[in-house]
Amino acid sequence: MACFTLVENGHQLARICAELRHETELALDLEADSLHHYREKVCLLQLSTRTATWLIDPLLVTDLEPLGSLLASPDRLTVFHGGDYDIRSLHRDFGISVARMYDTMIAAQFVGSTEFGLAALLRSHFGIELDKRFQKADWSKRPLTAEMADYAAHDTAHLLRLTDHLQEKLQVLGRTAWVAEECVLVAANRIAEKGENPLFLRCKGAGKLSRRSLAILEELLQLRDEYARSLDRPPFKVMSAESLLWVAERQIRTVRDLTGVPGLTPTLIKRYGEQLMSAVQRGLAWTDENLPRFPRGRGEPNPGIKARVARLKTWRETYCNRLALATGLVAPNWLLERIAELQPMNREQLATVAGIRRWQLGLWGDELVTIMAKEAQTP
Image 1 (cartoon, rainbow, N blue to C red):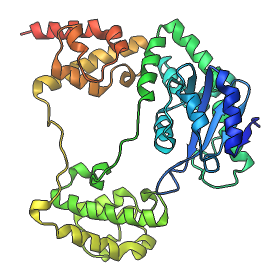
Image 2 (cartoon, one colour):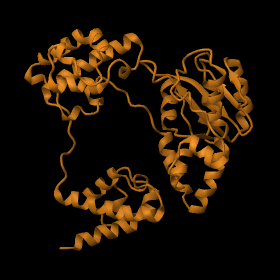
Image 3 (cartoon, one colour):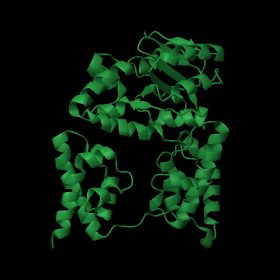
Image 4 (tube, rainbow, N blue to C red):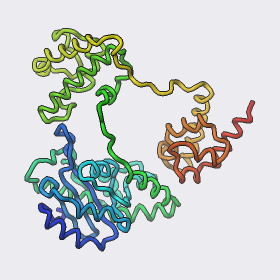
């Protein structure tokens, strides 16, 4: 069992944060309820030093300003594991920004770990076995069980020690600055506002539909969203997007024809069948001039760019084998596509490619522009 203190009121949090103001490093994690409610929220915050752990209950402690002040100090390093979601959620729910963060998942990837989940890393580095039964638990439920609290506390109790091990390896490999740059970028991430955009834009597979089927899909997704909101459940737990895509693509018009749609059980058809068909009819009623369009990219790249991307991927494969690092880590596809389109002839031009990192420029920039220059000279 992990040792921890449960923090359930603002006075207690303020006192603890005052005691921690001299700490130069903290470990942080959070638990949310995204798998159980329509609007997800942070339900628990785990905070650790090298010797102590606190579980902060934001459902009871409504003023997290003392914690926010700690994390906002550039004199303090906050360690996460897979911190992108945490960084975004802290800002969304509490307006908290993290001045300096370190991500042990990113660090593990850059030392060449092929298994970089927290459980795998703690097992390989320290022989610690984490109980992962509560990964998908509803963390909004109170009171927390002893088992859930113990599970949560373990997520940060060992992070600072893990950081030591990973930083030692990175220093030997000469990759410390790479991870530092990636962590600066993660710390600036924020959740994008959904706005008034159509729901089909967030539905995987919608891009293959006709404009009429897109209208039907939008009506179906809006219907599902209404039910999800009223039931306080995530939309995917009401009906799967795959089922709605199937209905929209085939423009199914009768409840009887819903039988056999993947994911639509007899219970779901009985409960929602008539409403689904009404949504289909609303989609069919859209006028031709108002039918939605799925936004397309810049279209297929020309053959020259496609060939260049293919050659860059071949180079990348060989290069990454030398480093024993994943190809998507060293030079992801989107970056190779942008480089192939710009076809930089020198480091200065390569540096203008959107999204390229300083460490990438230093690592393979000269080699890549040499390849680009030789290709340009080839008849």
